[in-house]
Image 1 (cartoon, rainbow, N blue to C red):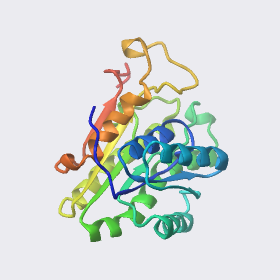
Image 2 (cartoon, rainbow, N blue to C red):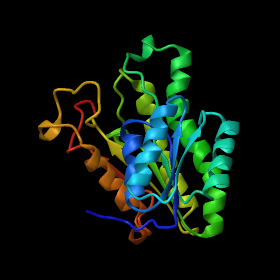
Image 3 (tube, rainbow, N blue to C red):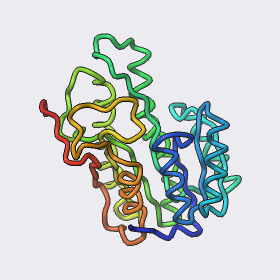
Image 4 (cartoon, rainbow, N blue to C red):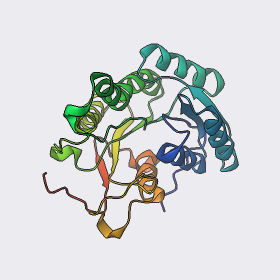
Amino acid sequence: MIQPDLSGRIALVTGSATGLGREFALTLADCGASVAVHYRSSDEAAAEVAAAARDRGAPEAITVCADVTSAQQVDDCFYGVEDELGTVDVLVNNVGAFAPRHWEEIDVGTWHEVIDTNLTATYLCSRRALPAMRESGWGRVVNVGYASSDRGLVSPANFPYFAAKAGVLMFTRMLAADTSADGITANAVSPYVVENSDAFPEDLPRGRPASFGDVTQALRFFVDEESDYVSGANVEVSGGWLPEDV
């Protein structure tokens, strides 16, 4: 298993009070980073993750509350991290709502929630993190996509989510190109179905969902010091899944 040394680094993981975001935060703690656990409403769960991160090796771990679709709250979130830990070296854009319904059944408010939490939040957090990364000459941005989104996944069910994740992959590649001379890498991890999902489809490859460990292994690779020439990449953690309509 790749085990990067992130001693002295500071990591912020959005949406890390529960689920896959929690595992990302704990993985970075395993690597020796100080960790900021972001949440919007799950304060007790976030505090538990911060405590677990300290137990797992993080020199420091804090919680930060923000609606990351708001530019002002993103700014305040980063100020909070900077005041307590320092500037962010590793940013994982994990937060993102989904709406598994036919697109015609989704109201405008839900549409905006899905697009904004997945794509706008990725843009806002990345924009806020970059100046300090550029100044230090080192940074890692890892965005969470979705399997097959870069192949034009167009199912009418959950369409705004697929559209947002396709945008996340495009943004990742643009960010990689824009930071190629700055010591920063920008990459994406795109799982299909993960072990904490509410329901499992019949077309699961290998007969099982992805484990948290399957997905966090890709994160470990991207944040490793030795992966500094890998940028603009997208690793699908899908077991080889390919939907029939792609």
